[in-house]
Image 1 (cartoon, helix red, strand yellow):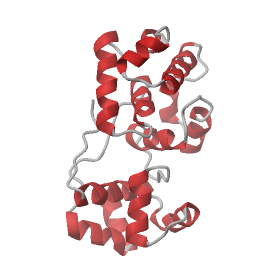
Image 2: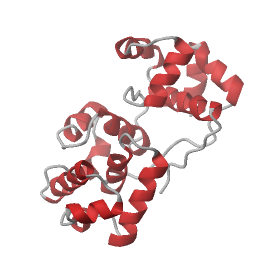
Image 3: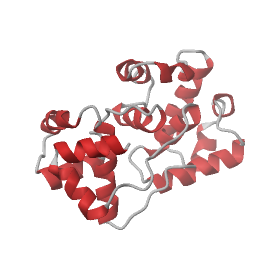
Image 4: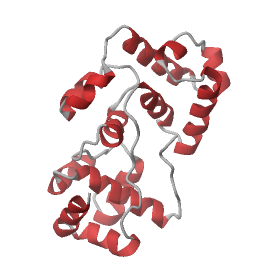
Length: 203
């Protein structure tokens, strides 16, 4: 981790600026691999982390364990009672069905390259690039992922680098390789610290 942050600071002054202003992140985001985290990531799509976590905890309180067999038979009305939209309920049930019928083996993903993981997860309804990026970063600990579907990352790059096109952002970020994931952590750190916000990624 220290090696990655040092590399970034030496290769791009924007990171030295972030570190000089706000220091290094105290905690690097981490989550367990598997179905439970993917359910939470689906809930987090386009809403605040706190809101998604509250919904997730309501589900877990009801079913005890977030497992495919415990969610696959829930009705739309039951999901709605937890605060889950119709669309996200479908996504969660599709994920549960894929795990139960062995369309995907989540346990095998940790041994595969990032592009293979992406190819498998993108086949699942409701699992897009942002969800896959976060899963790669937080769960599989892949070090060279930049989530350009993340509003905080994009807005911070716009602010600090004056780059407003995602293709240009992607090209610029090649200088951060092989530590794009840590670059994203620093961009998030800046975004949150500037706004006086804290996020707990655990559940």
